[in-house]
Amino acid sequence: MLDEYSIQTANDDLETDLLNSPLRETLTEYYGGDGIDDKDIITEMQKHKGLNMYHFLQNKKEKLKTLKDDRLAKLLYEAKDYIEKNYGTDTNPA
Image 1 (cartoon, rainbow, N blue to C red):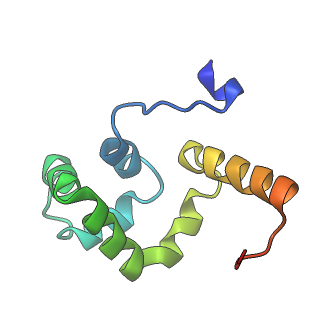
Image 2: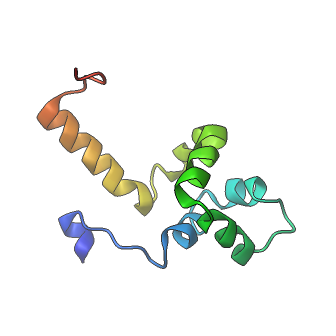
């Protein structure tokens, strides 16, 4: 499996994977509530993807902790560990 080599592929696509993650409830609420279906949420997430994700994170960043044990976060944790091990933890490397 590619995960063994820190190469992660989507199960479907990023938006579908996020919707099928522990963020489902938060994404459903953010994009319209209980009446919205999965297809509409995914379509909305795909519009202006970078800007859309930025706005979501501005409003719901505290919800990212729900991904702590999810496959989606695994590579981010690996990257963080690698960077800290090889370059330290200075958040302002001038």
